[in-house]
Image (cartoon, rainbow, N blue to C red; front, side, top):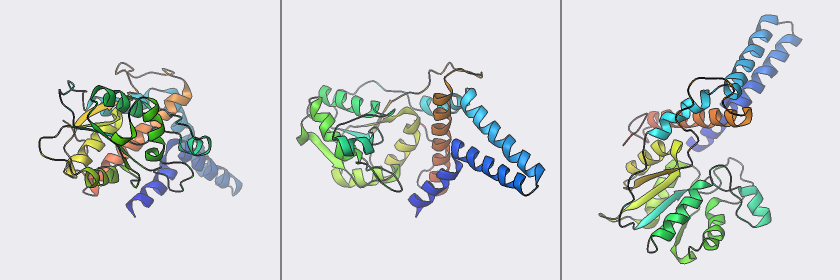
Length: 263
């Protein structure tokens, strides 16, 4: 139920969709003569789009998340690597049979680099599509094609293909490998996603060393207008809002112990 509710809630609350719904509400209000309500809806929609696309709001919301876990010194011995899904273009790969990457594709590339550096380490690729209505190939299904192309043999891969969110990533990954005391496992995911991911793996009893990748900010953006192109700024705001809402939701549901987990 948590999965379905979160997907439906996010559909309505993400900035672009919310602005569209507010514009629609304003249009309907204007059609029935509710001028004040119509103006309110249009103004709110404009503010959401302007702040999301024209300002550095998204970057400023993302940066604290990305700074929460610094990348540590690489351990001398690594027993395994857990890479969380979300890095592939599932609908394209399902049709074309390739391994097209999206904006979070750094997760997969970095995991392959680490696998080459530690040739005895196992690699867990955790994640299905994570969509409410799946229309593509899950990341765990695509990953073997990319990893073998990059020189990581298929016998080293452990494919966790049932999880739909980060909570399930942690629980199902632990069930697959049953990590032993003293083992060192690297957790590879986007830097902005690391606080939630690390807290969930800790809660599941799967000890990991955070290895953040896929940084979206430099930390020097500051408050300003037109610091990036509007499409990227809108995406940054959307990702940041989703991650902060995710942290609060997981905390309120008892799945993590703190609303802003840290090292």
